[in-house]
Length: 225
Image (cartoon, rainbow, N blue to C red; front, side):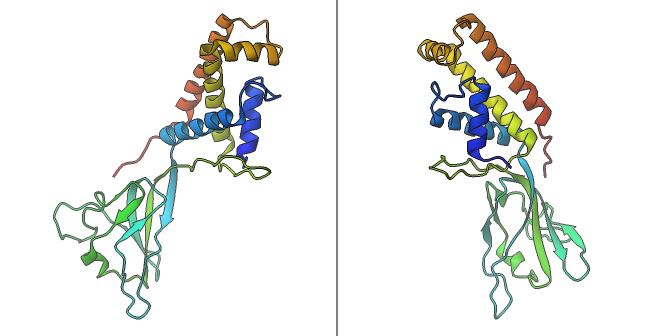
């Protein structure tokens, strides 16, 4: 997996600014982070998270009803029995207090990176012999700024890296197309004096079209409760 520094280097090449004389590193990092934000919007990570329940060691009872989870938008919650691996889903019920083959309004209690179970239901849950898994969509974390020799991994696949760089290129060229002073600097520093403002506008439009096409290819058709 690429690091933030490697993505930044790639973006500098895409922007024809290998010497790093036009765009600052912080600007290019922001382009990369903007690409990751867009990637999260159109293609969030389909993730499975096994919940670690807080259990009283003496009684075996679950002592906590709400948990932070790395999933922003769950679409399924399931229980697995350890003895034989049998799995059943906790579905949203139509009646308060009804449990049957499912749960009670888990759809309303699971969103935004947090899930909360009814205390009465957890009071009946056998945590020693069952586990809870949550399926849903997680966002990729935004990498922090590079400091010295340290650079965080971005955790993206090759296709995702390409998409983020495509977005960064479009953002950089768009800035050049609308900032005449920066464009003049780019012309001189990168030996692109033959590129006219009109050509830069077209290069910016082409870069945006590349990103739009890539965005359509990676878009996730989401599952919902």
